[in-house]
Length: 280
Image (cartoon, rainbow, N blue to C red; front, side):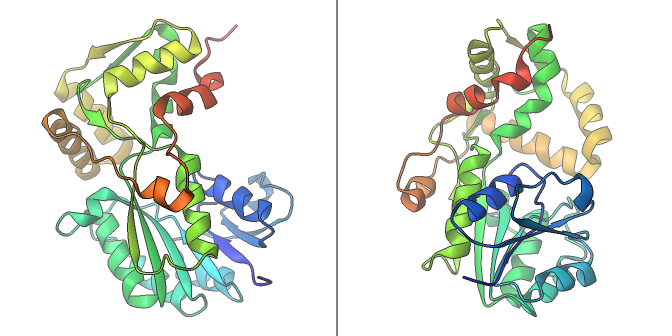
């Protein structure tokens, strides 16, 4: 392949690994980033300035590309602007891999379902990676882990968190191999693990006796609302509350596509232990 592959969200949790994975296999990469000078991308990646929510910037970056990895940053359920960006991609690339979420399969699917519909209607070949939840989001607990107590709601919420490297490898395969067009993969870890147990595992890998402390729900909602807005905070809390009685799905799609088991949460914690290590 001589045409580049466009990677949006190139400096994000999955995007960096997608860029590195494509380059490692010899594929040229064009990375869309707001600030190319600060992107610190691997050698060989072509960094171009632009915002993924700007259709003109996306069209310019996609021109001459063979395929694109799409990470949509918005949380608005209406997915405002996604149709225009999908159309801009569809004008130039024949294949798009979109980082979606398992919630897209449920009814309207919120923002993820909205972006999926936009991509499906604009791009000849599409693949959706419906992620249950990224293990890397637990880095938000790092300061609390160092202090030995993580205070948050729904410690019994049973989740199937996936390593960002697995998501990226799935994306690379869907971008460069045949046989993935029209597929919506459920991308999860290989196990269900409660949030309190996640803290315990992180502590074991770091060497800190970390434990869970249940946080009052109103307090947690206020903190989430401040961080991500009221609508998305309510979605998160509803999802966690449901996971008390109904664990997140464990899918075999990662193993089927990659030909190896999905990485466990303990493996993720081991890979990221430096982020949780006590200072000094």
